[in-house]
Length: 94
Image (cartoon, rainbow, N blue to C red; front, side):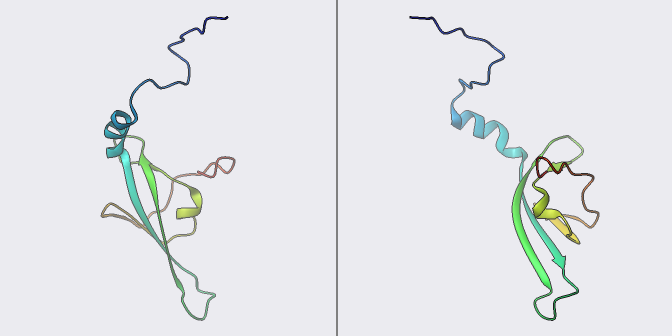
């Protein structure tokens, strides 16, 4: 029987899931996006909700593009941003 090697750079996580959650949950944010569709005669205001992750200390958030694309207003955990997105990566839908 072959012995399994332990590589510190492998993709396995030996940390308990509860520990991982406690460590990373402060970086998860709740996002509300609002867009206005001028071509609809009724129900012009559309709302979307989702989540994202803080990825640096300046407050940059990574989220799915369908959540924020075309939105006029984005609110994450009470912080309002009228300026939308700094970029996208279509292959990954981010």
